[in-house]
Image (tube, rainbow, N blue to C red; front, side):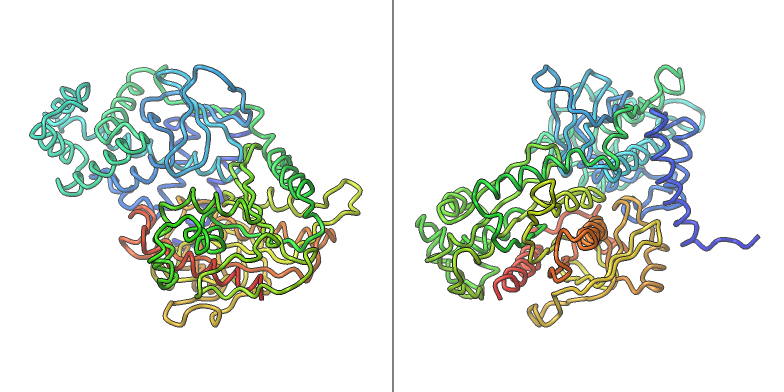
Amino acid sequence: MQDLTRAQKARVAIRSFKTIAYALALRGFYRPSGRMGQTLADCLITLSPEIYGSMNDPRVVELNGLEYVIDRLPRGIEECTRIILTEEEQFGENAFEKIIPLKRRRACYRISDNEICFVITRGLSEIYDILTHITFLNLEAKKIRTRMNDETGSVTNEWRDLEKIIDRIDNLTKQEVEQAIWDLSLVVGRSYHETRKVYDSFEKNKRENKSNNGLFSLIYNLGKRVEQEQKSRENYLTVHLTPSLMNIIAHQRYGEQWAEDIKNKLLTLNLQDRPLHIISANLHSVLNLVYGYAGIRACGNQTDRADDELYRFVKCLRDQGADIIKFAATHGFHELPDRSGTHIDCQIIDTGGLDGVAFHPDLKLNMSTAADEKKPVLLVMDYAFGAQAFEVMDRLLEPFNKNHDMLMNVRSISVMGKAGILPGKKGDIMLATAHVIEGSSDNYIFDNDLSRKDFDPDINVYAGPVITVLGTSLQNRDLLEKFQSSWNTIGLEMEGGHYQRAISAAIIKRHISKDVKVRYAYYASDNPLTSGQTLAAGVMGAEGVRPTYMVTKVILEKIFS
């Protein structure tokens, strides 16, 4: 039998992980340390995702990977032995603590000291995301457990010292903290400086966002949990997936309510017949470019900076959000917070209200003298998550009424966001010419209304196919290099292919015109093939401002051209 290449093994592992996750949702429960959990772990080990760095090295604990995961899971997850995934928001007004992870929009509830519940509203991608993170945590927990004891089986001095201070971790002296970090570095097999850096990052988020219990608590509780599991099966970590969870798959209940709210708002504002331009983006860049220049002048804020070069100017708007929104609300801007559970807030901009509004000199918007009934309406929707993008766009593009005789007047659909880049570096821009969906042979080619010449000449712009992946935590170097060589892919993201599926379906069903302009542009937030540039290395910060606003500027200029 012919041996598989590493890229082929990775592809099999991703397909297996996807199949097992779906089977677990049908089965209803599993134990990460049990047979099914070990199968998931084997898939992850085979993949050896770039974002998890040294996960497969038994000698060291992967600290950056732990930080990445904990930022996306609810505070206290390491203390729990019972994890519930459910699709039904059953809690309402109750005594349970609601926890929103720092970098994932998902509702979680702390039910008891050892039990936590995730409310799943965004489809299979969210299930994959959570199960991947739990699998990784369990693998690292097992490594921590082996490092609690020396070769004779005795508890190490470093672990004993950690046990002594864990209950008073927030009241240590500076000298005690330094000693504790030193001991912790020996436990996790990392240098003092590596451990100190991750400790400081955990403490910052703990202090400012209350998003975790600190690095000491994480390492201690992960190790103790596995120790307790080895003493009794009753202590096993168990993940339950409720029967109602399968209702989120294909039924589109959350997307249906979300789209209905948007259409009702358009009808209420009498905007249903106007040209509609949909933009999937963050909720600040369009707002700031359209209203920021006039808004801060109207409020008397930082007028001395208003004529700065555009990308310097937008940095001055960071703390001006409330004033800009207040100004925008009097000039055609409407906020539409989500109430469906999709976690996708929206904004509606009636450009008929922009008469007399000044724009930054670098922003070239052709504000024609068209009649009011022909002035465009912008619908800005916050980012979807993975396969959820199909559900929400599919529902959004349906006609206003069930008789299908009142169609949405959609003129363009623009998708902007961040993605991993393969041939370039952080801050570069990618223009998709096709989407290839990972784990299947599905691919979608389209005419992107954006091109290299639309962007500033001093920024790197790559055009080509983009992979729509199952999750950022399932990416393997060999597989990405295979995609790059065989498909000529330039990047990877999670939503584009699903948006295009919905757009193609709407054209086939004659819900929208085949002449709708489609635009896909991403800025590079990471390069998973370059050491130190994966998502686990941290956020871009200020360096992401220019590419974000450049993409936004180009999309707006296209809409108004």
